[in-house]
Amino acid sequence: MVRVARDGDGHAPVRSVDVARLAQVSQKTVSRVFNDEQYVSEEVRRRVLAAADRLGYRLNNAARVLASGRTRSIGVVTLGTAMYGPASLLMGVERAVRDAGYTLRVATTAEGDPGGVAGAVEALLDQGVDGIVASEPIDEGTGSVRVDVPVLVLGAPPVFTAPRVVTAGVDACLLAQAATEHLLDLGHETVHHLAGPRRWFSARDRIDGWRTALRAHGSREPTVLEGDWSAASGYTAGRELARDNTVTAVFAANDDMAIGLIRALLEAGLRVPEDVSVVGFDDIPLAGYVTPPLTTVRQPFDAVAREGLKLLVHAIEQPDAPVASAVEPPVELLVRRSTAPPGPPRRADRTE
Image (cartoon, rainbow, N blue to C red; front, side):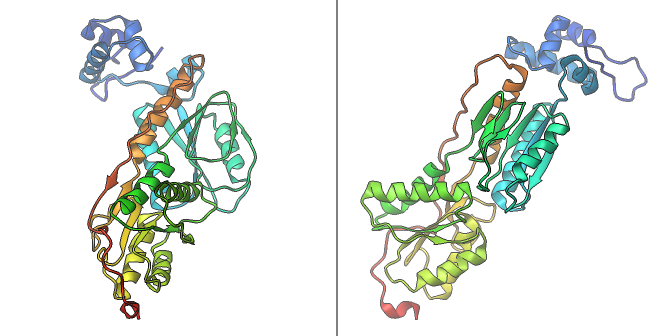
C-alpha cells in the first residue's frame, strides 16, 4: 500500500515487512500505525515507530493517496494579517497539520470582502483538500458556505454546511470574564473596557465576558471605548481615560492596546497600578517585559490547534464515527505588576 525507501544509502528500499519483522508485529499493524487507525495500543505504536525510525522507513504520500482516495492535505481559510492572534493561530494550525501527517494549503481573505470566505473555500476545494480549517475572525455578513468535506471551525466564522463540522477553541467570553473579575476581586468598584473593532467576533465575545462579570458583581457598566487592536488606538483611549478621575481599572481587549494605554496614563502623570490597574488579553511575548509587566490572560493557540486538528483528522479518516467534542483548555490568568487594589481617590489636578 505504501512505498518507502532508505535515504541515500544505495540499498534496496525498506519495506513495511522489514518494519513489521523488526517490531515483531504484522504488516497490517504497521499499516494501521502509519494510517493512524484505531485499535492499536500505544505500546505497539511506539514499537512500530521506533523500528521505522531505526530502518529509515518513510511514507510515500503519493501511494497513500492512490490507496485511500485522499490527498492528505488540509486547507485553512484565514484573514491575511500579521496581527498576533490570527498569525499565532495559523502557526499553531500549521504545526498541528504537519504533525498529523498532512500538508497545509492556505487561502487568505481580506477585511471588508463579503465574498472572501466563500471564494477562499472554493479555491481550496479546487485543490482537492480533505478538510478545511476556518479561522476567519471578522463578520462580513455572509450566509452559509456549502462545503463537501469536513470542516473545523476555530472561533465563530460564517456558518458552514458540510458533511461534518467540528469546533474547537478557548471561550474568549470566559477569558474576558476572568480578567474583569480579577480587577473586581482586587476591590475596584467597576472596570472600564477598551474593546476591539465590533466587526470582530472575538471583540464581541470579550465585551460579553466583561459585561457578564460586571453584572454578576452588581457593578456599574461604563461606556465601552473601541480601538482597532493597535497600540496607537490604546494610547488614544488612554489619554481619554486619564481625564476621568473615577477610572481605577481598565480591561483592554488585547495586549497591544493595553501597552499603548499604559503609555498614555504614565504620560498623564498617573501611576500603574497605584492609580489605575490595567489587564490585557493574549499574553504576547512582550507582555512580561514592559513597564510595569502586564497582567493578562493567555490564549492557548497551540493547544486549540492540536485539539481541533485531532478532531478534524478523525472526521476525515473515520467518516462514520460519531463527532467528538473538543476539550476546552483551562483559563489562564497571568498576574503581573500592572494590577493592584485601588488607591486613594485622585485629585482633579493629578492629570492636568
